[in-house]
Amino acid sequence: MKYFGTDGFRGRANDSLRVEHALKIGQFLGWYYGARIGQKARCVIGKDTRRSSYMFEYGLSAGLTSAGAEVNLLHVTTTPSVSYIVKSEKFDFGIMITASHNPYHDNGIKVINRDGYKMEEEVLAQIEEYIDGKLTIPFSSDNVGRCTDYFQGRNKYISYLASVPLHSLRGYRIGLDCANGSAFNIAKTVFDMLGAETYVISNTPNGTNINVECGSTHIEALQKLVRGNQLDAGFAFDGDADRCFCVDENGNVVDGDAIMYIGACYLKERGGLVDDTVVVTVMSNLGLFNALKEKGIKTVITPVGDKYISQEIKDHGYSIGGEQSGHVIFDKYATTGDGILTAIIMADILVEKKCVFSHLARDLKILPQKLKNLSVPDKDAVMNNPAVVEFAEKLNEKLDGSGRLLLRKSGTEPVVRIMVEAATLEECDRYIAETEKFILENGV
Image (cartoon, rainbow, N blue to C red):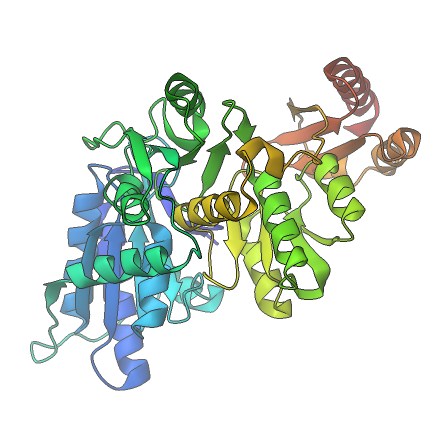
């Protein structure tokens, strides 16, 4: 697609993503759904804390109302909250304005269908045609919508999150890093409702400090908070709070792989892990595959991207899946990754197990992992070269489960990504160097 990628229409604000794009997206969706259902379309809009989110909110609202839609504004909220509200309150669609973990000068527009999933590509393709002037739609002074502050939607989402856990968090000391983003006015509220003693950082957004040296992409701040205050656990979110990284009582990072391991083992113990299967991407650590296998848990592997995980879970009804980056889907509770929900579930398991957090993943042995981006003239030629394919196969045979080599091409750059897992970082470096040398000599 020209504008919409795997995570919506994303770009630098006032550059590759402009207000006129938002206006046209709103116009098309208002008209499309109004014509489809034969009445005014109903939608919700949420946004993160970037300064540019205001102008995109206004642009979308103008476009939607000009095409007759009834717009309900959630204002600053999380991406998963929009998915939840669209589905639970039976809206026709939803829109989230966010660039997730990107810097503040970027922004994005995610469109969500009535079932709480990412919008179908055939609809996105028509939006692109309208943006490029290949489609026209009618406007009428008799068909104008309106905007409403839908504060009750945020409250319903918070109440839902608080209803998920089975146990009180009274007596537990919990750290929260809100990334100066969407979680800033929700995460503490929920954890306070559950009885936790909360310690919160990065909860003072100013429009430009989202993700700056904080949140799940800069976990060091939360590690320092947990160690310095002797907390039981800490949870860090990204800009739109659809991801979560955890920190145990010792200040050690618990990433998406470890979260999936803890969640899957918990579900299996209680007979709630459908087909004893977890959905992961090719980037999950080999240590996760080995540890799950030891517990009698199978894995289904998808390409990198939460949309592939979501589709696999949706198609087969699996219970849990996710990415190493902290985007984890618990299908019983949400249609998408939800960082605050993930934190609540991890805390609930901690209470039920009556142990320290580090004990939950004690049997998970993560292998050292290194990644190198190798610039090449033709990434497809490298990936399709039989000699390179054979080299990778032979190296993986040599490692025989004690490590692995994974080659991937970048979706946006002339780059081949070389990822190696092995017993030591020194071995990772050696195998990366061997692979790079072979590709440069034989793969181009």
